[in-house]
Image (cartoon, rainbow, N blue to C red):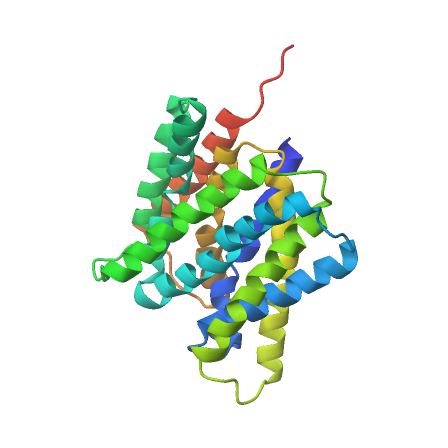
Length: 284
């Protein structure tokens, strides 16, 4: 189980590289093009590898998951990113483990473990200490986009675990990516400015986000969703902003102050505590 958690944790760690790749390699102000070129090629690659067509009964669920996990979520993600400081958006997203606990409590009647609940609350507080600044702008639309995105991703994780069938993992992931990418094509076409030319940096950035940050990361993520507690999976998502902060410190020489370091440690301890509490207990 420990190895599975570590492998699954690679996914949010890779997502943490999205910020630096976007700011350093991609053309500015094209969020829908970035989302489309991130999802659609990744979906095509996984479908070509898996060569599996879902059963007729599986299509409705695949489409719903594609919309929740990718299409609408990425629209809200970029909306929040453009209207909020990255720290504030990450803090709002950090409520996902709490949302998952209450969703499971509401749907399945299973109350959250007290230690996991307390650890998740400390994770949100730690994220706030790590990333928020006194000058953070509380844009209403941005806050609503980030909060709605967190809710949709929580529902997506919950349903992906419940609706998992015998469909091969690559096909299960690939069809969601492909459908979401197709749905984003008209938004990218009509809303974003056209790409006048693609430089080698643009191609490198889009290629990395699609192959590594999406195809590989989401394959690992959905493999974890099928086998790890939904609350534990949601908690692992906190590693994404942590990864972004560490990469910014290493690559861009961004400073981590003493109080921010305390927040970083608090988030990591929150993630570790939730994984320990939610891990299956063995007898003997």
